[in-house]
Image 1 (cartoon, helix red, strand yellow):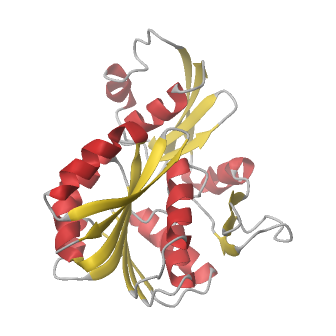
Image 2 (cartoon, one colour):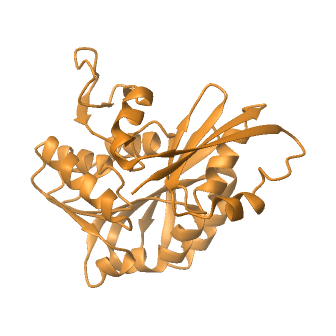
Length: 278
């Protein structure tokens, strides 16, 4: 499938880059690369971009200026596009996310090698970075883990490296689920099952840890199902939203006996850790 690329130049770049990413992530755009001047946003070429932009903050900005250039990228050129933009990602002393073409000699901590293709989750975005950090800071990695919206599979791979023995990695995009399979194999993961589907795939299953890096609206719509699938005392890690949304999500989660125990933030993005009390 072809991909549409929007090169969005913003002035000023901050905080509008994060706001634009948050908005577009809810309209069909699923991958982003932050640039020196703004952001590159990617979606399937079949997306009605005119309609998306018509109702977007980008249509009539009042507090910033923007310039948008559209390009159609043939499917076979996607990896070359990522190789041009994908630099190593270092998560403090814990971990390093590399592509196959990177030099591994300067890597820190646990190394994961991924070929992103069209999947979200390279580690460059603040949410994936924080979720990786949160995994390393768990007191103990549960054996049964759900990675919802797995993207490249990088969080599932780190969960296995940290001790998980049964990991269900789900993505709503078929090509993303396949990319996660390839990356799991690339990192010699043995305990990851990658599935194409949505929340119905967890019916009847139980997990000690659920990882969900999606967006606020989808997270809220899934929260009841996450609570049902989480063992008592189990941990839920959520990201894909701003620090301004933390109180809303934490309060909403209380009705499902999910209590916020930790909040991480990075460049106005947030990650929260919740524990199921009953």
